[in-house]
Image 1 (cartoon, helix red, strand yellow):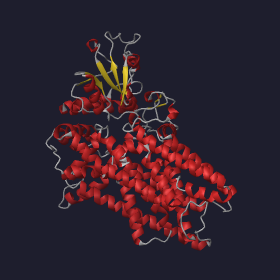
Image 2 (tube, one colour):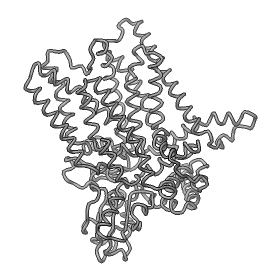
Image 3 (tube, one colour):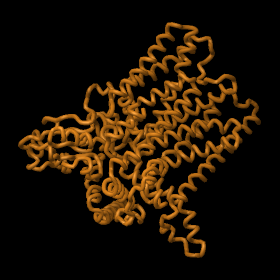
Image 4 (cartoon, one colour):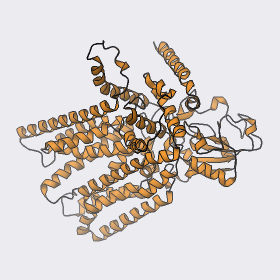
Length: 621
């Protein structure tokens, strides 16, 4: 996995969110100021930024993108400009991005180790190896694991927290409560969606009430004391996590202006009071920004546009982007468990690999916690109106991988009553694991646009969008294609907020929906996302074209005469335009690009946004 994921990441340009995350993390450490990218907690960004700061990455804090962000809400625009200048102007983009991705790759490998460890405790060493093989060959984790994102970090700390959760019911020591607090704090510092863990805590407690496990007390008074003790432990762990989060935010915001608390009158202790109030204020402000960004937005799946999220979005992505061998392993595990129950002399198929009754009971609680957290998270995904990427489903993917852990032990138990069936199951399991490994190697390095055979050979742009298909990671392959062809000038319509000159020096930014007459006969390269979802450029597909980066981008030889808009073979009319990320009415990408090129444009654009917002409020009331 280190070779495949690391090798793929070395070949990729900076992806969409990395532009903001990388520079933000560096500023946290260099300035102890958290103004940038508040809509995501800092942990993953800090991990990625640490080697950059140690290597002396250059950052210009006199730049307009930094000073402009002092005002509240301005950072939502400035963070992209600041990130672009940090990566593309002030530092070498290749080496800077490589060093930022190294710790993220290590974090991904740590997640794999945790899955192996927990899988071994549930299903023995073979169960752990099965979980590890499924994880290490999953294209989703190979694609996004090394990137400077929050998704692997939240998945890791979610698993750690869920595994520690049953211990709150099992007479934990103070050290165990501290472990739980640290795991929960890690989750809260990774992503705001970690708040779903509190629903997991409640759901787990209710599951023990409605479907008790053997280790629970049977006497009424003892049961009440048992439950009260568990809730007390949870409260202590949560308070401990809150304390850890507070300390991290306090340190990282130590130099951040406290102008937000001008309402507090001046007195000798007011500067200290403002400073102490900054951590909860920044966290709540970031949570509010996250809530705004996580609200309903248009989505695209199976060739259809929707004005809001749809419940089947993540199930469809899961089926399309998971290796078929992994899906078959899940079916095999689902079929084996009831077969063992029917034919084995054992009463049930415990997932535990423990040696005594106490350990069996303990691991039964862990198995329950895994299932409960999976159901809570999947329910939240089905109800969510923010349907963007398979990476937002990482927690569910990791938990589903753990469901494979009991399979080897179940097959071993099946051998007692049906040796032939057990032998077939073992060979089938081995064959599917080997197939997963072959699939991962064959897909290298194009893991991000990976779709399995269930796509029926259809182009990815007719099924999925956004970072499920292209996230601007393929610019080095574009440059390699142009160099091999001897192309000195290319029209480029890429899926990002950056000027691509560092990756494709011969590129001229282009809009595939609005070609100029003098574009005729030239080479154009467009993101697959602009063919149907974020653009309406399917008209280009009738001309000679070549697939790049596994279907992330397409190189097209434009005709010598481009038909007029609205005519056969020509671009769409303005009324038929599709806009970036499905937003209707304007192209947000062009707005951000204008600020990247000329940071002086940030204030006029912010004024325009504020005027539009004020006008919208007046209409509403």
